[in-house]
Structure formats: C-alpha cells, structure tokens
Length: 442
Ligand code: 5AD
Ligand code: SF4
Image 1 (cartoon, rainbow, N blue to C red):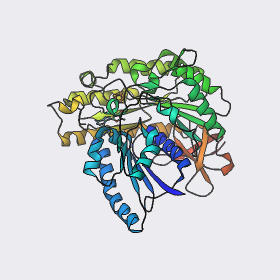
Image 2 (tube, rainbow, N blue to C red):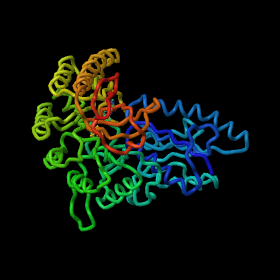
Image 3 (tube, rainbow, N blue to C red):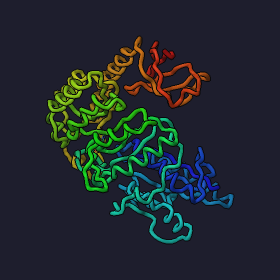
Image 4 (cartoon, helix red, strand yellow):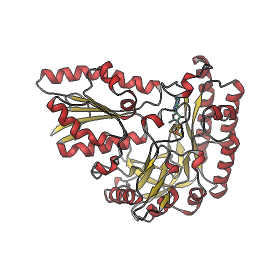
C-alpha cells in the first residue's frame, strides 16, 4: 500500500471533498496515513476565503519541501498536490512560487487526480487542472467508501451565483450547480447503511438547491429533506450554508413539519447596516433579515440561529458597526463566526479606496466577539436543567464518556456506554464548560 496524507483547510465542503479524494485514490493502492512524513502522496485541500487561509498553505508547502527531500534521499518519491480553492484561484502561480508542488487541481476537477498522477509518473503533461468541466464531477467519482461516522456530510449543491463583493467563492467554486435528487438519495442510503445517523446537506448556497429528477421535475431543498426523512436509519437532518434570499416558504414550513429536520439554522447576515449590505451586494436589507428570523420563529419557536459576520468592510463607519451590534442584540444567536474583512484579489471590494484601518477592524472584532460569546453563553446556560435529545457521535476524551449533540448543535458529554454511539437518548443537562454541556442519561 502507498501512503496518502490529506490535510484539509476551510469549510465542510472541503472536508467532504477530502473524503471523496481518499475514496478516489483507494483503488490505486493509496491508504490514508496520519502524518505527512514518509507519505507517497500529500494533498493539501486548501481554502482561499481570507488571506490568512492562503498563507497557511504556503507555510505548509515550505515544511513539505524538507519531507519531500528526505523521502527522495531514501529512494522514494512524494507527490505533492494542491487541491481546493487556492489551487483554483492561483493555478500555475503556486508551482512557480512553491516548486515542491507537483500538481494543482481545482474543486471541480479533482476527479481527474488518477490520470494526473499517472502523467506525473511518466513525467509529462499538464500539471494544473482548474477548469469547470461540463461533465459532472460527481458522475466520475466512486461511491463513498471512507468511514462516514455518525454524522455524515453530503454535498448537494456547489458554487455560487450571488457575487457578494468580498467573496472569492463564485470564482473558485464556479456557478451554482445542484446534483440530481436520485443521486443524493442513493448516497444518503449508502451513508446510512455504513452507520450514518445524521446527514448534513452541504452547499455554498444550499437553500438555493434546485435539483432536476429523471422525469424533469424540479426539486427544492424542502422536498429533498422530506424525502430523506423517509429513510428509516436517518434520524437527523441538517443543512448548511444558507442565504437569506433563498429561504423559501416550503423550507421554513419543513422546520415545523419534518420532525427529523433539526431546529438550528446557519443564516449568515454579514452586517446589520443597510449601507454595508448594499455595498456587499447581499440583496437584502437588515429589516428583511429580521423579518425572516421572525417568520421562522413563528413557525418553530425554539429555532436556534447562527451567522457569519464581517467587520471592517470598506466604508464601514462607527454607526454601520453599531447597526451590526444592534442586529445581534435583536436576533440573539446561539453561536457565530466573525471575521475581519480581508481583501481578496479579483473581488470588487478589494479595489475600493475606503479600506478600514487594521486597528479599527481589530477593535470592532473584539467588541463583536464579546457580544457573540455572551449570547452563546446565554444559550448554553439556558440548556441547564432541561432534558434534551442527544445523538451520540463518538467516545469522549475521558474513558467512560461519550459525546453527542443536542438538536441545537451543542456538544454534550455524558458518562454512558460506547454502545449508545449512533443512537438518540434523552439527556438531563446538568452543567457546562466553556464550549460544551455536561449531562446524565435521563
Ligand atoms: N474577508 C473576511 N471574511 C470573509 N468571508 C468571506 N469572504 C471574506 C473576506 N474577504 C466570510 C463570510 C462568509 C464566511 C464563510 O467567510 O462571513 O460567510
Ligand atoms: Fe460568497 Fe456571498 Fe456566495 Fe456566500 S453568497 S459564497 S458569501 S458570494
């Protein structure tokens, strides 16, 4: 067996892609390994969303150079591949800047890895594949074989047509594309047969999902979720990431009507200021977003929300930032991600003159994160004393302990037998640590 080391950066879609790359290379004799030293093939599945993410890739490539030299000294060969969004965005530039790299492959063309590896072995041909081929990538991938775990990702939609002015995704992941519902259902059945009890439907714009079945009928995400809920072994369904503009009435209804659909929604708003939302090309106002949250809570009162925020977008004033804080106070989030704006080459916002000073970004991020953390604490404190259904996913760090999640995605540690992994049990929540809850079987 040859050793394959894959390092994954960035989002859950990359995690899914990494698993598929492992599946793709398994028939070629590659088996996964835990560290890059001595590996025959190293794949960095990269992220390009912020400058820091891209820098991490280059520093890792620096470290790989030594390992590759060591492998060569012992008469072996380490093939180094850069996959993912940095590969897509930078293409040839990566090889020019880091000659340790043998090949570069974008997120829509990694199904070509086997032929690329063969070409490398022969020492010929193109080393960069970064187009958006017409042939569906998923059609040329083998069935999922890697360990799925209790909670499994399933990509249903890729790409983005929204073109928010700060974001590289429409350029790195390409135009929106939805997989056929039959293929998704077949993959979900396979995952559940392998032990998955929760399916997390993934897409850059997952709620814009619009699949077409063999009869030519259009499927919304809500319809897909209803159908998935019919698979007996699947106990929970989640989806991420959603755009406020694509939150259809039927999807909101599904949160009330489909018991397996969890009451947690990641719905990024980015900013609470209409001026900034407009400059970001988000195509909705802060009031639209507030209304949407209210509509969802009307139908599903216990719904927990999370969001992404960007501070220091070009032109963001103190009142704009204050509007973001006010929106956070009004909504009350369960957990959030927040970032300093990072100018990305080729995106419209990067070219704007009114960039915000780094010190201002830092100060605003600190204020925002303090507020978000207080809200997260509040949400976790509110769980103490309740009895919540927990889906157990894996052993805990301490012997005798297992870890699962509440419907609201909070991790819970419980003293219970390993045999409960994969099942749902009511748990009485007794205490909390910084980021998780503790409880006992009810
Ligand atoms: N700078 C900072 N954050 C960004 N995001 C996307 N692009 C940028 C950028 N240029 C954030 C958004 C998005 C999340 C995945 O990353 O908040 O929702
Ligand atoms: Fe990026 Fe906006 Fe598309 Fe999300 S909706 S991936 S932030 S362009």
